[in-house]
Each structure stands twice: as structure tokens, then as C-alpha cells.
Length: 167
Image (cartoon, rainbow, N blue to C red; front, side, top):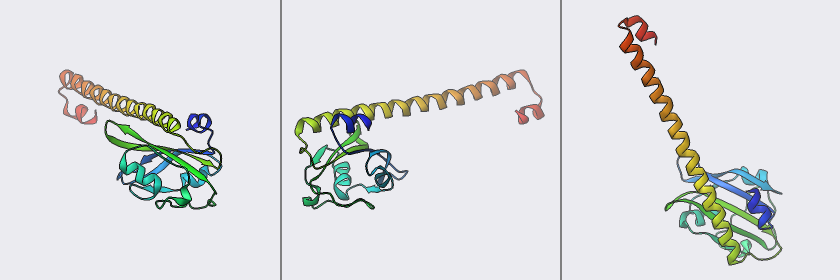
């Protein structure tokens, strides 16, 4: 999120991940002038600009959010003239695992090469998240196998039911 905001010369950036049900998304990180308001916002898949982009699974930029019919104002923020928004889904294969978004208040319009750069950043973020998930699963499985091994050793060495139940 820091890199996206700084390298793309934006005012705000955020990374959204799905809630437990997978239909709405919340910012796990938000940086910039309205970071608190972004973190407090729930994005519904298919609703608003970000939700529509998440549902479509394709990166997109909007250089005038006020003129876009999908626009939904983030609660607690003021409408900005020439607010620009660029969103890239976090993809694991074809599955959308979240989204990375950046906002500019005025300034230069977003261009295609910036969208491609954000899409590359989002791909790197998605790979990192998937690797972290797989590592956590592997650690959990190793812990479970260690417990099974400990119990198996105890069973092999003892036939005392009371000691086994306590173990």
C-alpha cells in the first residue's frame, strides 16, 4: 500500500480483503488523508466502483469518480473535484482474493501504464498472501503431526489408561 501510494503519486491507498462470508471487503491497511474513513468502509462485491471492479476481476481506473454511475461516497469524506480511483483485484489464479486501490485528488489522470504497474503490485501482493496462507497451513499441519507423534509414542510406551487419558 505504501509503495502503491508513493510510486503512483497518490493521496490514498488501501488493500481490501474479504470478510468470512466473502461477499464484502474491508481495508486491512489504508494509508493517506482519509485512511480512517477507508478502513471503516465495507465494500460489497458488485456495488460501487471498487465492488464492481472486484466482481469483474479486472483492473480499471476511473479518472472522474463523480461522473461514474457506480460511484458511492465513502462515509465521512468530502466529494472531491476530479477524484481519480484505480483498482486492481488481488488474484490467486482466477479467484479474487481482495483488491488494491489508490486515489488521487486532482492531479494527472491515471494512464494505462500506471494501471499495469498497479496490477503488477497487486499480483505480487496476492502471491505473498497466498504464500503466507500456505505457510500457516503447513505449520498447523506440522503441529498436528507432532501431537499425533507424541501421543503415539506414549501409547506405545504405556498401557496405563489413566496416564493416556491425562496425556
